[in-house]
Image (cartoon, rainbow, N blue to C red):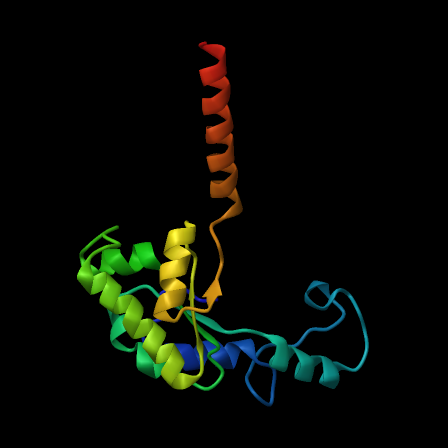
Length: 167
């Protein structure tokens, strides 16, 4: 998963660096942490890694949005992922997630993914937002973040306890 991917050339370089030869130029080291310290057939390990890895290009700039169709079409790119805060910052509409230009950007990313057989991804922070994204064509959703979910649960619990304590 790479941030701020703004061109097909950068996306192609990311794919190149993510794959072992002959599919790419990823450096090889075996029997270490990234393969659970297991030995074995290194060629089979490289083949498996090349087929199992997922390359995610984050669309977080106007340049990335302008090139999203080309980025999504790069062989080996699996996901185009909207980084919504950075994208709205780059668009000059920071945090305006109901702005028509931002909503059009979501639709453009979803269409680029659909047209190229890649996946559109996003991290929604509410069920309503997730539902809207699914309706737009996004299919890889990382629902919220554990820290924020814990914060919401803690805030709700503390509010209830404080309310009970002031009765």
